[in-house]
Structures are given as structure tokens and as C-alpha cells.
Amino acid sequence: MSSPNIAKIIKKLREELQLSQRQFAKLAGKPHSTIARIENGSMSPTISLLQEIASSAGKELKITFVNQ
Image (cartoon, rainbow, N blue to C red; front, side):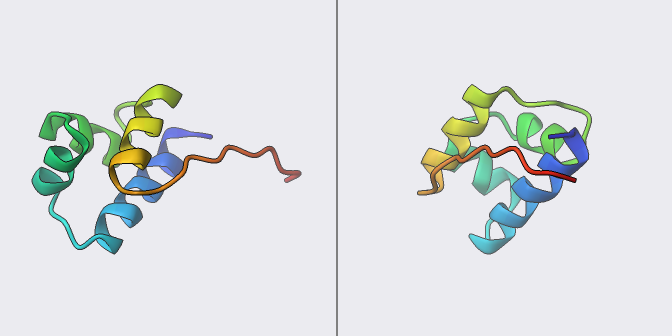
């Protein structure tokens, strides 16, 4: 999954929770800069980081391969 796709997904999750980036970062136990960099596409998060974010938001991380 490319960074722009991940950025959109993370931003959408944050917005669904109605949280600011700072609030979302605090919930996830991460620096605000980490969430900001993920959302602007300048950081490609690891699967481990995505798992931590998903868990903190009460979600399950699921990775699938699909035909394009």
C-alpha cells in the first residue's frame, strides 16, 4: 500500500473518531509529528505502527492483496 493510500486511510479514521491530529496522536501514544507525517504522506509507517494505531482506535488491522 502506498503512502498516499495509507495517509487517506489514517486521516479518514481520525476524522471518523472526530479527533484532531494532536488528540489522535495522544490516543495512539505517538508524537503529533508522527501522525502529521503519516497523513501528509511523508512517512511510510511500518505494519507494527499501523497495528498500534488501529488497536488504540479500537480497530483491527487487516491487510489484503487484491487484483487491480
